[in-house]
Image (cartoon, rainbow over the protein chains, first blue to last red):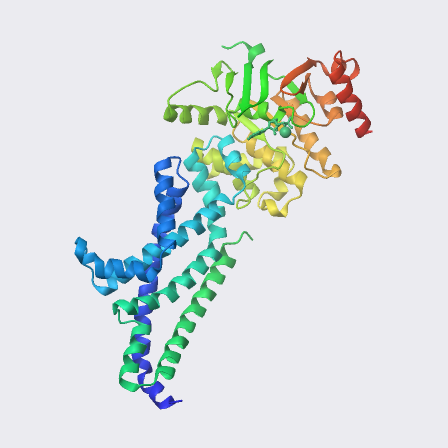
Length: 215
Length: 256
Ligand SMILES: Nc1ncnc2c1ncn2[C@@H]1O[C@H](COP(=O)(O)OP(=O)(O)O)[C@@H](O)[C@H]1O
Ligand SMILES: [Mg+2]
């Protein structure tokens, strides 16, 4: 194994890891937004919204994220959507992650005992007041861990955007392989950095989960 | 004002869940300050009747009135929501499984709704929490979370939460059924105290002794109808109907 080479190139990998992190953060924000909207649609009183929510989830969970990215990035211009690779990466992955998060958020909300809603309504709270004072604070606590799993998947999924040539960790590894012919070292380096990012994120999620628990 | 003898009125209440008819033409008047117990076998429709009063389960026929206002009046959706929320503020409800908000302390359980709906200041809310928790003997647990309380304590906080809205009517759906036997008395004591303060109450219960001691009237329900009603002395000692006798025989035998 060529340690010298790894030491020489790792600063470039660190920089690429920065892009991966930025990509992950933006994707997570968009994913959470889509997930919240998706869950709201899935739980709506109106059948149209429920249908749209369900369609969103089945389409985006039912096809490979890579195909979704290709359609958006390569197919987009054909229908008038011009995005650079990074934008396409964030939007494609964010919408994809949102489909998974929709189910996570919805699952947490519907797992709250219906007696909670009834107690709120009995006191005279409106549907909305009951939701944000009683249901959501409890559901949010239950969501932390499963959303952490979604986040973990999402970070790993950012490797896909190498295929549309976003210069992030995986793409960088591939590029250095082209000039060094050392795939083992280059992918190992990328893998180590992914692991650090994911480990740190996991610790963050665990910390948040402990922090939000009642007592 | 309104007729105090018809403080709560249920007129021809009918309720079906699909093809299952759970309430069959039930009518009932409760006077202001009166305490009515509803007894009857499991599945007879007691909870459904109680939950119809504050429209948690909407009736499929009939009317509910409280203090001269129809609770389940037909209005367009938005207006109805506003109306029913106002009515529910006047109707306290206590559930078998407490349904306390686990993410709030006893204090916040009690004050959340009054703060939100009546715009109490923090000082007012604080005074209210203390007043209501004191009343149910839970002042010393004011900053405890539900998970730190016993069943009886939870139920007492739940009663304080309902009382904090200053309701005109209190509904109890088997408030002590989920409690260990040694915790039943502390909750019954609180309910007795409310009775002494002339709170109007409708109490679904399996505890015949408690019903006999506290209530002005007892209704025996079976299969969606009120089979028999009257003062507790009559219903418990001298019931007329065979179904009542049979139910009491089983129940009193079980209890003793
Ligand atoms: N939401 C519901 N959907 C369908 N059936 C119900 C529902 N709630 C109650 N029932 C039925 O209505 C009947 C009366 O129930 P309930 O009022 O809970 O009786 P009780 O409180 O006297 O035990 C039972 O047969 C029960 O299964
Ligand atoms: Mg019941």
